[in-house]
Image (cartoon, rainbow, N blue to C red; front, side):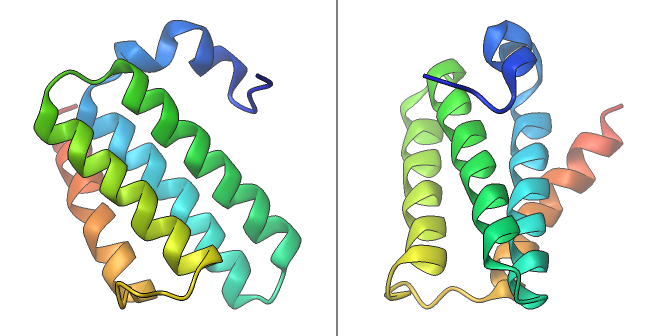
Length: 110
């Protein structure tokens, strides 16, 4: 598999805390939302693919069923919002709000 985040895929990702991982995923989702709002589907898609890559790296490194379940559901919700029919009723605001708490907590712990 070819990774966009090559240094992270080589083990650095697993050294980040779960909060830092989630904040970074949120950054990529935020970029996808921003490019979508600017009506640039190519850049939005690229950011979306990077967010999926980070979610997959997190799934590979996380321990505990609750976190695995949350990450799998998160991946499903993001895919549904950007690529599906939005059956979960997600909004740009709800996605940003979800990730904001992780960003805040990760910064607070540094």
